[in-house]
Each structure stands twice: as structure tokens, then as C-alpha cells.
Image 1 (tube, one colour):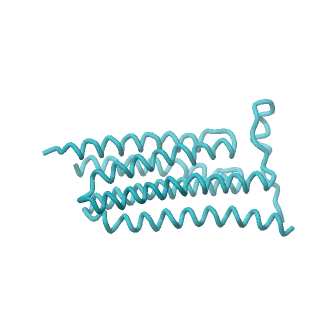
Image 2 (spheres, chains in turn brown, orange):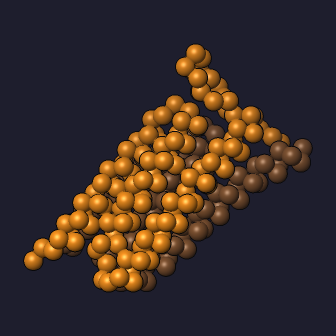
Image 3 (cartoon, chains in turn orange, green):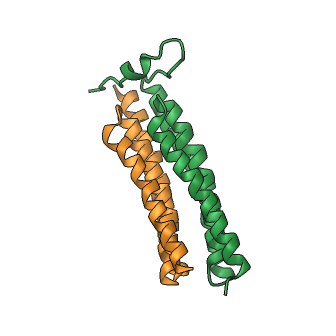
Length: 89
Length: 115
């Protein structure tokens, strides 16, 4: 079972590394923000797989929930920042 | 000894991983920001939720499974809302969507600097 989870962790790292290309060469700011959100969403599942590997899912899942809330707050705050900046000028 | 719940959990994690890789390639290959929003909001949400349900099968007991399902529910609520807010901010900032009639707009529709 440990081998299967290790293979899953490797494939998750591949799935996280693909949006980094969009993060580097994205034409606009919004592309970069979108890829940051995608990376954060996949990191939640990666953290839980690492918790399975340590046999302490109950501790790692609190970190994952906090990470999900932080990801959501950061996306909302950045969108609101662009709206406020457009209204101020 | 191989348990049934290990097989079910591994299968669900693999399905979620497939959706996530498809969403990553969509984020890389689609032509416009608004098209990439589909790949980042819908496909990734399905992948993460299915993977978290699979992880809830692999935990130690009911408590960890319940917390994993709570995290899945939270992501199912928040991830499309975040992508939608970002797309709305981009649309209000003067970012024109890509259409099939003039596909060169995808390259020229850079957001004009506000300051």
C-alpha cells in the first residue's frame, strides 16, 4: 500500500508542475493568479497523501482545511482588489 | 492482505488524478484566459473532490473520514467561487473573450496597464 501511495505522490507532483509553465509564461496577471489557484487546490490532496504516508491523516487534514480556506480568501481578495482599483481611478 | 476499502480508495484517487492531469493540460493548452477558467474551476474541482473521497476511504477511522469529507465539501463550495470572482474581475478590467471569428485577439488582448 505504501508503494501505491508513493506512485500517487509522484503523479501528483507531475500534475502540480504542469501549471507552473502557465505561471511562468502567462500573458496577463489573471492567468498567473488562476494557475496559483490551481496549484493550491492540488496541493491540498498532496498534503493528505503525505499524511497517509505518515499514518497521521487526522493531523494533516487540519493543515489541508486551513490551506483551502487561505486559497479561497486569497482569490477573493485579489479579485476584490482589482475591482476597487478600477473604481478608484 | 489487500482490503476492499484500499482498492476502492486507490481507484477513486486514480480517477481524481486523471481529472487533475486533464485540467492541468487544459490550463496549459487552451487559447484564452476565460477558456482556461473552465479548466481550472470545473475539471480541477471534480478531481480534487473525488481524490478526497478516495483518501477518506484510506484513513484510520470514521473521524478522519468525516474530516476528509468536510474538506471535500469546502473545496466543492469555494473553488468555483474563487475562479468566478477572478473571471469577473478580468472581464471588468477590459479583458475581451476569445472568439472564433478573430482568433488573433487571444494574443493581443493583453490587459492594459491601469497605472
